[in-house]
Image (cartoon, rainbow, N blue to C red; front, side, top):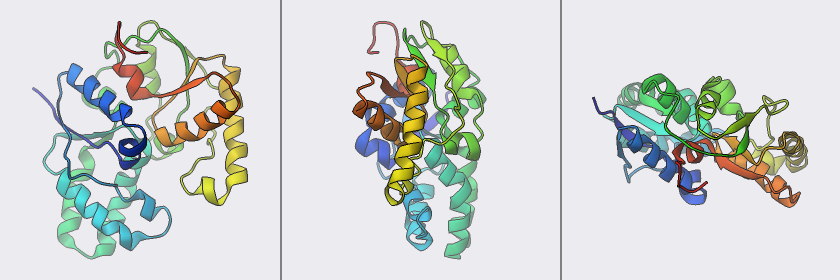
Length: 248
């Protein structure tokens, strides 16, 4: 049976990292999914809730539930945004005092997945037919690790890629220091944490640092670039979408 999937690109990816959601579409279609991109989608509301503007997040939650109702699955290449949907939307709907919105949130939320969860738990695959002949190391982002508890699913997917060499990242579970507005309000601390993460990545000798959230990759990648490390950062989706003869 074909799975009808809605791509939740996330506003950050849509504006700054469009190749990542494109990679998700290529990957899911290759695996036999019917993929839609609902054009009405906007922000999940995380930027409001994380900074204390819960009331302002209500319209975003209304739009999200209306846009993604009725799909078999809603898949996003972001542990951060999926974490927000799962852990914040119910609270926002209750704050709105709207029973109908609460019902809609309860109907949609169980179908929202981070990419690696969807591939491993729903489609039941780890070998997605990818080819990426490079040495990589994986950074588990805080939201995916602590809120979603994706565990080793991303590593299962990476290790099944043909041609790849996956090396362990030292102190992998330590935060990179991005944290959304934390990186602006506490810039010195954020840079120090990011520098530790960049150093650990360089020490692996990997060509590519991989993660499931482009926000963290932007932070770490900026430091790696300024250090002239020569190390690339790539989203997990882009590696999984790579095939022999394709871009790498």
